[in-house]
Image (cartoon, rainbow, N blue to C red; front, side):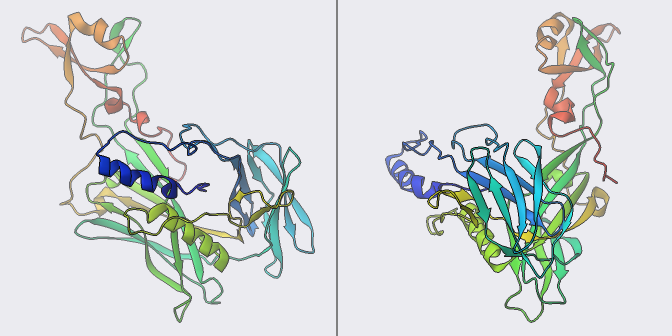
Length: 383
């Protein structure tokens, strides 16, 4: 999540013109779709473990593909006035170090040499050690539930905190097919559809807090995530893995600016986004723009689970399949035409009052196969 162009600065005036004219056709100003080939550096130097850095390039705004990976680069973690530690390319554009234990008395930086021979480096940064997460809690209110994080640092040396998280939840379909269309005929299903799947979503919002104005370096009930009582994510069983990072003041300010650029752009009175550059510089060309901020700190994690039985019984039971209509009936004469396309599946047999088969009930794949919404592979951490 490294914006390389201030979109709002480009399209805001056009939005005003379009609103005044009443035009509803989308407009993309000339040049907005053209992306410069900036290097994007994503990751941090783990002061107590393996570091993972991802390198990619910026790409067109209207391009519906993954960003181009920067492969074949040589990366090192450099200790100021000390040794350097290599990172290996473990996947295209992904570089990983061996487990390391940084000295809190030294500064560290990331060095990059691309396959084209261009050199880049982050600023040297002190190695911070993130304090443990005291607890991740949740509370319900009239509208839903909110998840909170609590932490503290007795040494008063953290002060700047950042969090991200991964969410996982159960998906339980309400229709389980008994039949399938195979070999030009409807028959009993050979491989049953899963009766439970798991959805997963990483956090995209920036969560920050600081204690510089407090008498203690303590975070109490900082809200991380909220859900209304009608959310399907909390309909069965839900889990959140919270990750905590200690930040320097400079990195905190970088993420704070990123937060403003990505979240506070809802009205004409919000501040316009500012350009983000980070702490990576080109050693080959001083004028080249590089995107990303690489800090040096450790990570702390804590996971919790929330089951439907723990929530108020008066809350509605939401499955996520409410939009699925009741199964339709497919008459025998229409079986080939309906099921051959593969967009619907037979569910159960339907009989005339005489006992003869009238046809089959059917539903869409999205309503019957929860793998359309998640994975049937049970997470190894699931309880």
